[in-house]
Length: 88
Image (cartoon, rainbow, N blue to C red; front, side, top):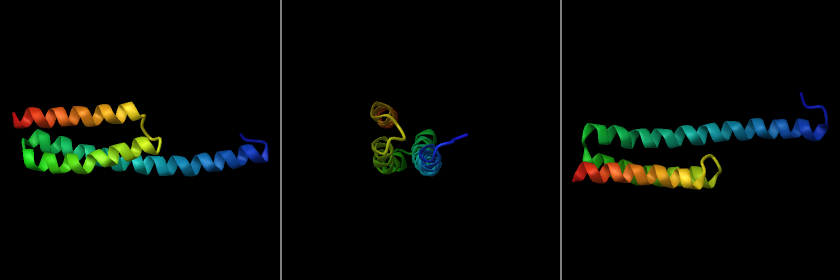
């Protein structure tokens, strides 16, 4: 348990930030899931639209520190590859 006032404040800040990051992560995963569901259904148009919506959301998560930048880029790249394979 935190003893000093600064440690107590840090604990409060971490708690608030954790809540915000949970929401951001959840939102990003929802967008990614929509793309994956469209790809699984074989719906190229819906998958393309979903990917266009998901890409900025993934990158925003990386910018806000929820994901590493390379992880976000890898996710976008792999989704794009799967979409390209679908249309081929």
